[in-house]
Length: 109
Image (cartoon, rainbow, N blue to C red; front, side, top):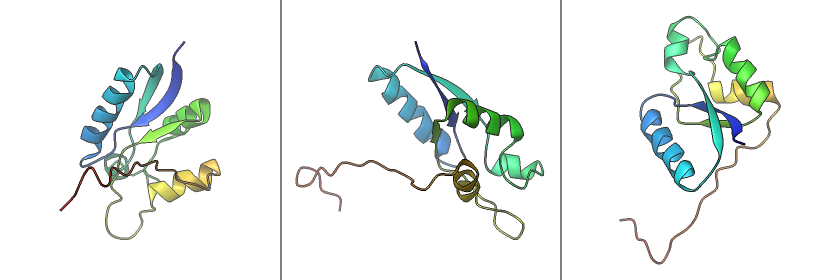
């Protein structure tokens, strides 16, 4: 049985990153059932000052898993960071970003 997760492709380079991430997870055998939501710049431009719609909150509360690519918060007044909004609304206190160091095998110049 696949595990439902909420997925947001985000803005800018986000869709490319999320596409690659989901391909990697699928190839690794992860049994996921993504529920795709739209967040970020396009939602802000529709007049939703939080950058996330009610239906997206419903998905987050239902799945309790959020895989999110980078998003854009428009410049200027009146916009709140979506990252902060999600963190505070969902009662999250950590943003875990696992990483691996390939040193000394990979050098970045």
